[in-house]
Length: 324
Image (cartoon, rainbow, N blue to C red):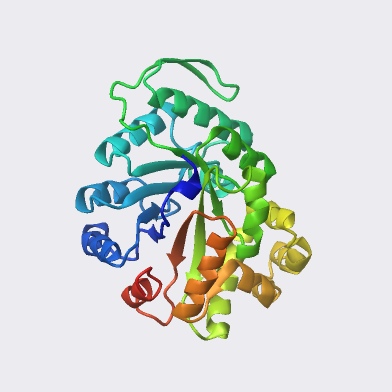
């Protein structure tokens, strides 16, 4: 289905900073406020599927997506099984997001070799697409061999699969073989460049995790943003992404100081304009307007990740909501 045929969607990143057993009231609140989607993150907290399973039971209208399930940390059959179970729990409302993740998560934390991420993502995408149809999956997928897996319970409808993509190769793969792409750590003005690599507007869903610090004091918001940027942009995949987007010269000072072990100097070397590009901040009204620019440039499902600094989380969710 063409993305332009769909009504506007308003996502938000979960889980929030609260125990999962308390999320029922948060899910009900965001439905009341007009949010249509929740997109789970899977980094160093809980896994990405459990919060969605709870939402499937508690809120029968929300669209549910995982951004993302790393392709290295689960076997391909298990990814297909989990996606099928989620699609069965929330028919027509679940989307599977997969991606390479990073060397930190895959190798340092999970002890798994992080090799040839492009081909690994491609092969898992092809395996899962085939498996979700109920077809018997056989053969050599370059990065893996599989013999005889067949999904016993085929979901109806089959859930879409989106790829987390940062640079031209993966973006183009998302455009050719997936149902959409998941973007991360880019500015509103960068969206058109990414969408062009996917294959243009109006043909694929484009989900974007957007980091939002709803604080009107730019000094406070930028201080938080600098710490977030330094934590991510010293991971090679994200560094290369920023170079592709054209921010290499602006970030060289930060990379040099970080490499030399000067963490404070690295933070100070991040220019304001980089923070202002990559971190949405300001009043609620200013933040909503900034997020709207992502949509104007080609994002079909914005999924803000709210970082509440100097503001109550519930106030931020309300202030950034479609009904505000």
